[in-house]
Amino acid sequence: MEQQESVLILGGTGQAGAGAAALLRQWHPALPLTIAGRDIGRARRVADGLGAATAATIDLRRADLGLPADRGHSAVVAALWDDRLHGLRYAQRRGLPYLSVSSGLVDIAPEVVAGAQRAQAAPILVASHYCAGTVVLAALRAARRFDRIDTIRISAVLDEQDTGGPAGTADLERWSTATSAGLVRRDGVFTWVTGPDAEADVRRTDGIDLPGQSIAILDVPSLALATDAPHVRFDLAIGESAGRSRGEPASFEVRIDLEGADRGGAPIRTSRCLVHPAGQRPLTATGIALGVERLLGLRGEAVPPGIHTPEALIDPAYAVERMTETGAAFTGCHGDGRSHPLTDGSGGSADAVPGLRT
Image 1 (cartoon, one colour):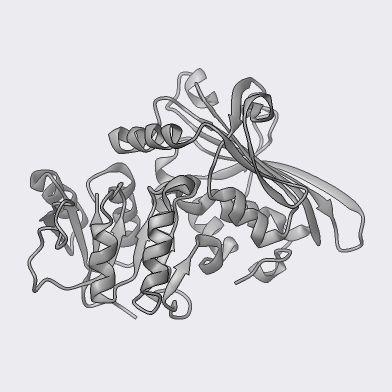
Image 2: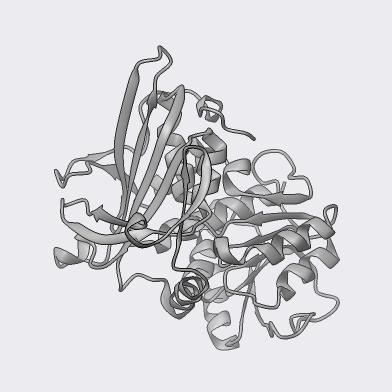
């Protein structure tokens, strides 16, 4: 089903918004897009490069976003921090699907309350996970060989030169101001950790350890509740990536460690490293594009009104295919340089993920 109205991408001139728009154009050539930003010149340049796209100036201080009253849209994407939630309210008043990626765990309460108060207005996809939910989806794809998962640990390296531009840097600063504690699931209990309990070494793909710590991020409850794993942790180190240490562009690196049991009850564990030589932008853009595609009904059944998260809507196997198309891969986690397809080799469907609720 092709949409007659355009997808309004707030912050469509930024790295995440422009990247997502490019993927949507590639996947759905006839899908109309509106690239919205404060600088109309930049918006026009992005729109002109896409084709079948228009440019618009927005003012996030205004409830109407500064857009003409007669302009129609099919969905609203907040690829930036909308501190007044005018983008969300704009979507709700018009019954449009809405997706956000900048709220983070510490900022989602207003979005959740707004969604609960107008539960029948339209679907809201809260995708303020690491790289818009792609890491969660990759972890669930890797979990398919397990019958029971006891422990999930995600370890990410974020290169200082790959924070996502000024908007991404501002997000990191806002989240660190809100809390320096990390959120983990320990023995089935969601627990805030600080000090030594929050500290952790994060190993790059070349075997070098960087100092990191547990962070408060939506990936923890998403993975914990999707798999029923009693132990879940997400550690982040900000420093030089393995790619940049080799004189290449800043690379994206996430290690996924899983422990549990197979279908015969035998204990198993696996470690995979999800990497991208071009940094975090392609995966963040993929996460946004996957969410928009799903919200619009371009893939899968219609999404009902209410609050949703990426793993509740998007097939992990399909998401991994899309990540692979952008150049992402699983590699050995100890710097052995080997590259593997972004699959676990087990075949099957997303229903094989233990405990996954869809």
